[in-house]
Image (cartoon, rainbow, N blue to C red; front, side):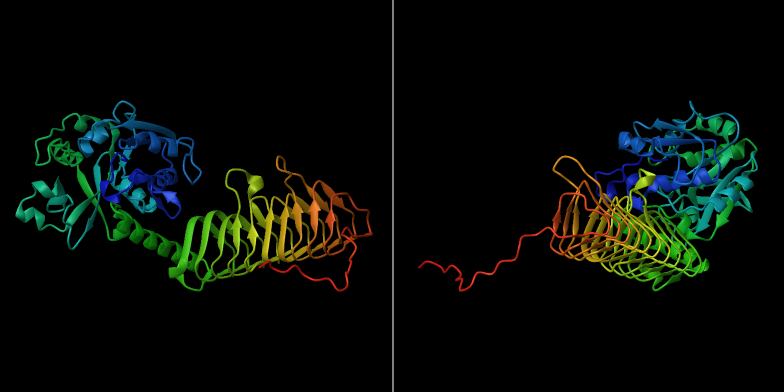
Length: 462
């Protein structure tokens, strides 16, 4: 269910599209459906329907899965029962239906598997939890161990409001019977809405067993209605991720100062300092060390590589060629920037205030400080001097610079592409090159030094 307006978010963005750990709230829920191997996912939209549907169209889950994705719209919005009524025309008659909320993103797949098992294909299974103060939630009314009804807060008696077990908003039940019960809903209640929870009394009347699958982890059923709740859940989500990483052997300098906004895969003996942000798909191989305050997105970091503090690695997500690759034993930073398409081979050094974009650096190449390499192919053991750049853009098109193996580029050089610097060559500091250079040659392209004796600087006029 993803039709709500989310007024308390105080945002033009539909509530279910706000981000948690780098993904829309609704995307988290759809990804869980992929983990459950669902064959059909139906998203009920309403407020911001066009925007919500566009965000999911063509994306069948962060986790690989194959399911039919359908959208239905709830207009006007007359309660949870009315929302689910909209799925009837597209819902298949067979199988088990799991009803989830688009603003409850932390539910776990294993919990839902247990809920489905409790349903067993012929029962109505409710996911419940005990709260010391369940104000605002529907109460679970039992007779012994048997669930008799769910009573909404506004319709509950004083005795019923004292019940601490509440309904999480998630259930599993047979599709065929869901359709039958939805047709019997009415609006005879305090809010004048169609309550989905009324199907419990229909099940009881029809002799269908109603079971409650109770959990104790409140995080899994936490909904988001305000920026404050979103921020609180973000930290809880990051804590869960940090604990999982540490259980795998990752060394975190401070678990409270880690942000993973996508997928982070780590090998053995990886260490991560404080205030690091990982976005998109990031892989850290064995023995990688990440310094403090780094931002790394869509990148693969090879074994034993060191990313020093304050480095920014920003690989692209849409095209595999834009992924940033850092080879084994490479050293990056501090204060380095690797942009989409940067490919560093083993033992490459990219130092402070060096930017690399759409360029490959072969084994042992070095650009240790204050340099720019854009659209370049750099050979093995090249030393690229401080203050030097590849001038790759002519105002309309990008051009490539090729620097062959064992070249030494002096400081403050400009290589105007397209250009090839021959293997083993040396370019004198301060040179501006616009033509290819031969292998093994010293190339100097700068004005002859001239000193003018007794020269006086201009003075200000009075």
